Length: 464
Image (cartoon, rainbow, N blue to C red; front, side, top):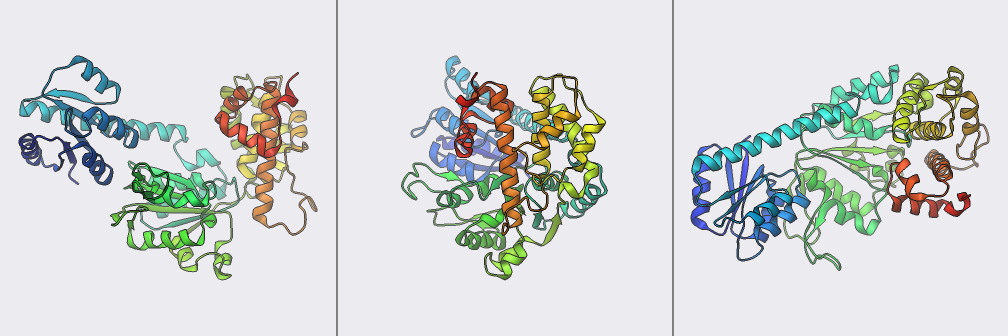
């Protein structure tokens, strides 16, 4: 597929020259003669490289560069100018320009710069992919464990990854559904394109449509500029709809149109744009049963469920618990700067016998708390027993859950309880210092503050 070059320049003769040069190089060349139209074209066409004039009658090149580096940070930009200005060149570099050419330029010079920029971009993508693979332990088994159940998941991922089937990943909260979605993307031909994930239950309903589809400037009160939607940000890659069962009915209908037409229309726009995206959805609900009772659009369910992968709960794959516990131990020891190196065999036995209502997420929280509490080089049986019996950990025993709760409600309560316990232990460990607790929990201060407020946890209760 030929590379696409966009030039934004108000000099028609220069645009014609560049178009002729790079068409001879086998590239597709797009042209815009001013800043704002150039931004719009860049956001819709997603070129591989941009040649950008510095001085134009509308938005100048630096303003365009700053805006596009926010929206398309990986886009290499070569600045063009008829004036030598060291300060401007420095400013353009600070904003993220790849290089800076002075007009009139030699044809071979601009070709060499463009080639170098494209090669650098390709190398960066390769390095990022290698980093992702290293950080993810290379494969799904390294992330989730060595059990036969995980090996079966790996085979399912390999089977479907090379297709464009829409995949529905089903499983309890905290079981690893997003890891499966990422593995599908990583094993597919779209691996070099974006993986965009959105939690359908985490965004207020009145903002969700704009977030997914984008909006035009002035489409509604507060829409001060055109915004690309998450669907468009995933162009060429994979879009992951986490907890798709939380989508309101009206958006279910719009999502169905996107899936069937492969087009997306921003809020306030008068035309649709082509969309090349592979969809993966996840749910902790029985969507088939909800579709049968009219609580979820049946047509959408069958469109999403072209291929179904069921992720087993952690209690159904106990062979993975030691692997995961040791993985979380290694992470937490580094992050929390604690010298804990091992988990005692008797402590591992306790972990293996626990029902893990909150699944992998709950196990991770317990290990992090154990690392914080341990005063030895090993996590002992006593620390683990105390944590598993604490109010912060929900145990799945007969009669433990109030009657009438759905599986989803039980899992949500377990996740909340595990989260509450982790927050309490972190805040207690840092004597009420929320900033340090947020860093230890790998979240931002505002998120931690809001969660503490929702859970009724007060920092002052932990100040000595």
